[in-house]
Image (cartoon, rainbow, N blue to C red):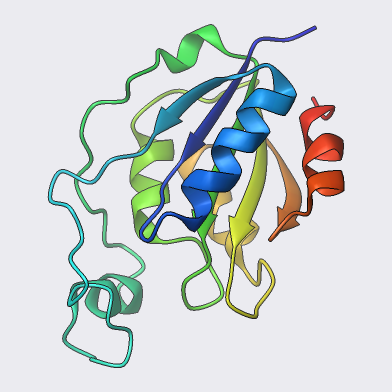
Length: 154
């Protein structure tokens, strides 16, 4: 049995709620991916092309700064990574997180929240940020049953 971590970024609380349920079901440690500068409601206004989230998502090389992780990634074999789907991909802060540690040889299982889309191009956009890791596309908006299935993945 591998040591598991649930790392998540949550802008509104939805992903945080799922991450806590998954961590409990998987008997995993929990780690929030925290932006160095927290997002405000105005930052998250996707209808405003000048909002922080819009600017970041329009520049795929954007890497919003994060606070140091509260977990030592090297101690884990399986890392669940959760995020809200923005513009059919993961927010670029997830790339920042993946580039902040060595994920070589680790399994990264993705889960996400979304108002209506699937993972889109999330896996393809995240893979270059963690070369040498095995990516598994988990579930978007997982139900309680889906969380149990995710929890048993390695």
